[in-house]
Length: 358
Image (spheres, rainbow, N blue to C red):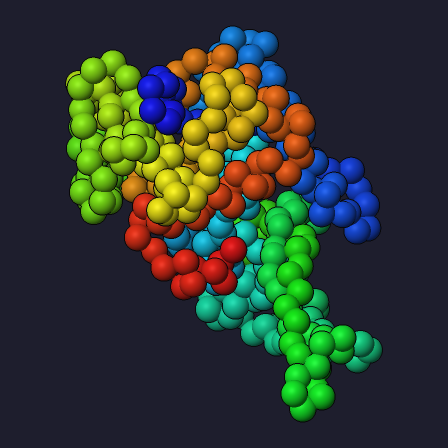
């Protein structure tokens, strides 16, 4: 919370319907609506059951490349709304890996692994059109690795920009100036668990000591903001640029205290001198609920990196989020984008360096 509002700590739903209606080319707006509907359906389920939300974190523990974050085939981490969405889908589907492939990337990964095991797999160009396929030379047949038949893909959002000639605006030599056109599109991906011919991730569960988290402490120490323990409220004070929390001993676990701190750190990034979000909103307003959602997602991202998780303490806290999501299908995407920027700031990352992993 910002200023004098009690904090209720971290978590997002990771159960619900993730299936999309079949279509050849779903629109970005359809995907945004589908993601939002998935979250809304689960939140309503929690509220009807009067249950606490499960951990706002990934469903796996340190598997594959990239730790808790979902990663691409090359190990690059996904970012923003894709992180939340892939966590959600993995939990709902029961996937144990954090690695995701495109269809052809899955085939190539399977072929590469088969070669490493001594099999003679050749890559051959198609006689018609572009592309290639893989041939099992030893068995004189088409290589069968890749995405298993019948597996459903998961859409992820990809954004970028392309440069074109702006013929309406010419430079001093009469040549078109350059114009940057942003774009957003979707890609279909598959979890490693859906791929035939790849070994399972070698998962070694860490022996976590919840009474101490060196990684989390290091983040708190490095962040240029005082954390003042004591009292019965958790909040960020914009005027003093400091965070107040109850003492660690007042929490059921140190993990919950860290989640609260990172939530308030999330609010602090909205300060006009940092990312400049509007963080002084009336309690109960849509703007207030949206900022709380940004702070929760920020906490989730940072907690995932340092290896801890938190939980929402009261189910009624979800009601404000529910209103925001129902009224704006793009709210979760916008909140995730802002939360990713906030997490990058808290972790001390260079925005330019990580832009390619959007």
